[in-house]
Amino acid sequence: MWIGDGVFRQRFEKTLAEKGWTNRVTMTGLVPPTEVPRLLPATDALVHPSYREGLARALPQGLLAGVPVISYDCDGAGEVCIDGKTGFLVKTGNAKELCEAMIKLASNRTTAKAMGKLGRKHCLERFPAEVMVQRIEELYQNFSGRPWATRLI
Image 1 (cartoon, rainbow, N blue to C red):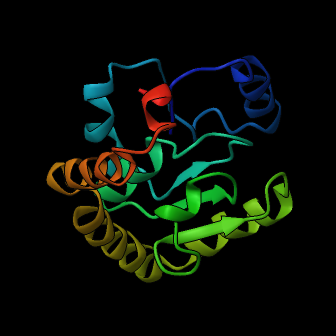
Image 2 (image 1 turned 180 degrees about the horizontal axis):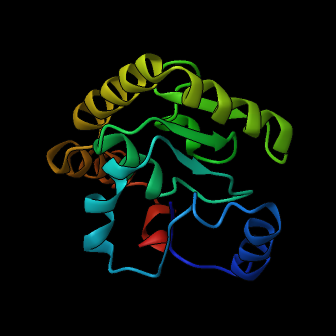
């Protein structure tokens, strides 16, 4: 399932047609953000091969749905995608390694389910609203009173 849209959609659709895989992939197109959590459990893994993105919202969303994640190891992906535990982090741009990670999860559903379960637990513990507010408040407390901090606010 490909949730969303993007500049590569037409190229992806063409490749699916050429390989005869159109009946194997559901393309939802853009959906409201509130619909994404409902769709995620229908997937075997969330694959996010972004070259740059702070902490992609899709990664914790997938894990919160109990779905293991596969991501390029860039920016904040490692905060939630713990390699070998909640999914697989692969070298950014390495499509072969990305494919191998997908095959690993697809061929071992027990491991995939365990990774998804651990990922959900990790995200629930690390990213609840109360914890995030507390961390932001601590950050402001640490910077308050410093002469250069007023320029940032």
